[in-house]
Length: 560
Image (cartoon, rainbow, N blue to C red; front, side, top):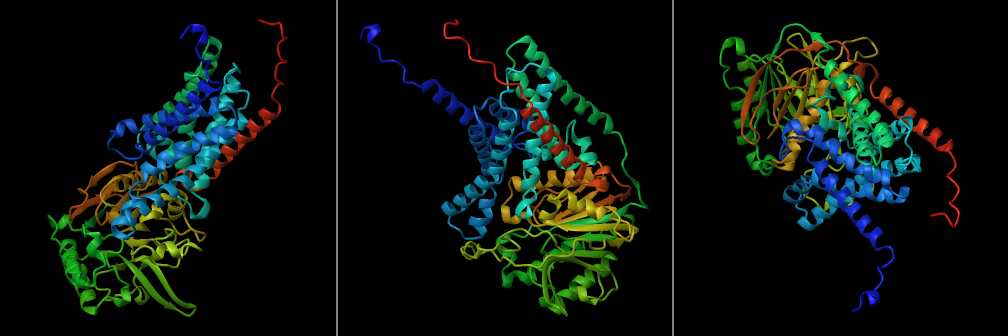
């Protein structure tokens, strides 16, 4: 065919290809961010850098989007990949333990990921609207700094809304990728949302630098990069600040990991042999008398039935174990308490003290009632009973515990218990450390009881450990974690893991834990400062948008 007879290029084809590449880049960046919340396959040292790189791709796509609608679509694809991969383990609980057919379990995961992705879509749309007309042509450093502030503030607001609305889901918050690294020391100031803001600002800096086309623009983008690096250097300097001081003598703690298969846990015929096996494990002799634990902590629902249904013979065995160890035992158990207002059913924990002679919380021993319940697992949202009936998991519709509950006093230390999912909410854990209204002191040691056997032996265990490290950083309190299958660990007040058991294998971890006292800025003020900073950044961006200079008049028709 002669050259002049070749078909003309289809109109819009380059734009379609460019849009397709953008959508693919958003999906791949979201998949990369999903890998950044615990080691494996990425090494621990790389997580902060990989997270910033992943979010930088989305920031660049957002700055280059022609309108907020396109930006929202890119953000939604990013979030879909992030949550579809990052919490894949939800299908394990629904399929393997809930009996839901695998295609339905995968569909439920994708629906959940699609809902969570809406927050990223909103952040991208808001940024595109705020930065319209200022993404690339504007060369002044203040404008580029404000673009980065707008992106970081929009992203942080989306993270906070996701962690708050509809009881909240904080898993895979961008800040958790920075439990190690140069931003980690900001956690005592601004918590995980503050780290999310710094991560998003750094991602915007990298995106603006990548989009630089000329020297003037390069200098303005470099100013944004410089501010991000300054924040990192300040974090490194603050890493040496001591926010808390030791309280009393160290406490000897034993953490028990039964590794009871989830398929066995709720089998009535296996209840007695399982209890006897766990009791033997908990009462193993210490290495020496100085190593004798003062408190033995067992995981969530180590007693899988309500405490008032446990046979007296089993209670006698548990009391005998506490007597033989001369230690307070903390056992996770569903609790039933009769009150004048009616029966209360809670997911909780009970303390058995040596010589206390009590087997029920109403008998005078300390107990804790979980207050932040898991949707579908511990309470059923209105309109979703059909979904629960489709599964075979022994789900509960529990009552919530009080917002403020007294810590457990053991050996001069004050232990604040939380159960599983509760330690993903930093503001609630910080409240257990702060003094209450009567100036009663808060906790000196944080304790988490978990059973992640519902989710297999994959990322959920390691991601939860990374979350726990953030809580220790925010509060300057050590945290100990007793879990059924992992990750059972001791974390010091600086967020470092000082000991851990191999996941999936039964064992005990004996450790000396030094409680602390003193309040970090985050414990004092919670999320209020970072939320105020975020809203201020958005207001400044709105103001700049309204004062934006009018677009240049179109060039004359005969202009080259």
